Length: 328
Ligand SMILES: CC(C)(COP(=O)(O)OP(=O)(O)OC[C@H]1O[C@@H](n2cnc3c(N)ncnc32)[C@H](O)[C@@H]1OP(=O)(O)O)[C@@H](O)C(=O)NCCC(=O)NCCS
Image 1: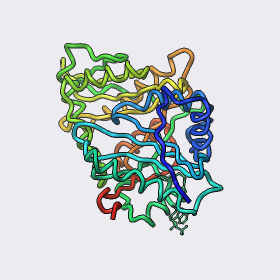
Image 2: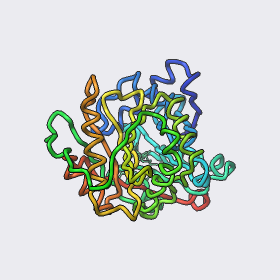
Image 3: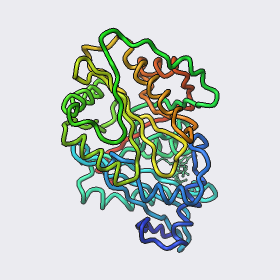
Image 4: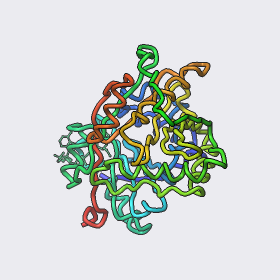
């Protein structure tokens, strides 16, 4: 059996190759992510989720026939040693060594570009993917709780949180006002206090320049970012962020929520997220939900989410292996 791993450029690939990729992607769709039609998969390939570096796509062929895919992300800056990978083999071709062969075929190029650690994100516990990864020696480095807030059935009165004395809110779409930029960047760095398990992925060291670069990346990819901040005087002390990607117009993904340590314990996180939810449902057409992924040990954030009406969708794992060890 010869397993070929062939690069697929989503901007230049022919319709037949794109259709194969979409077909295989659908076989491992997470029901929590909703229906995956052809256009939404291709739009997503062309506009990969921001903040995770370049994306790479591969079709896995056996005897010329496409039976699997690989999706890769090459994060930058403090994460240049990492590669994020997802391997999918269509169900009727599993347990024949194809997934393992596809992964192994990628290792030389990962080593050549200095990616020392491979991580798989959001692997369902006890799924085929989890068992496969364990058989290859991947370690579980983090557990993530995925939650959703469905606007249609939410009790919206839970979002009316009394403002903590001495604080006020501001909000914007896409670009932080220049006068708040420096303190906003500093407040974003409070995300470093969130528990991340043993994953090697580091959150950015936010600076005003990196905030502007991230905003620019969102604009270039057609991603809408909304931010609500809490201010003490003229200084940002907390924030919550959501993004909406071009292939899912009805849904917002929760980004960071962070409050500077000196201001915690005053329900600012709850107040910020409640204000965000009220803002989103005031939009027309109204989006249907917000989804979020939080470290399973992040009890404070999960409690805030529950208070606002988020329900648990499932628990998923982050798995990791050293590229060098896998190559042996
Ligand atoms: C994970 C996946 C890519 C594995 O592909 P595959 O081609 O079936 O994997 P392999 O045949 O190379 O499996 C190699 C070994 O892994 C282990 N393994 C794989 N699937 C397993 C399962 N369902 N249960 C138990 N062990 C399993 C076995 O030890 C297997 O060797 P064996 O068949 O001789 O016992 C495939 O199951 C899949 O597409 N799952 C959905 C997507 C996913 O979860 N990807 C993983 C996240 S990156």
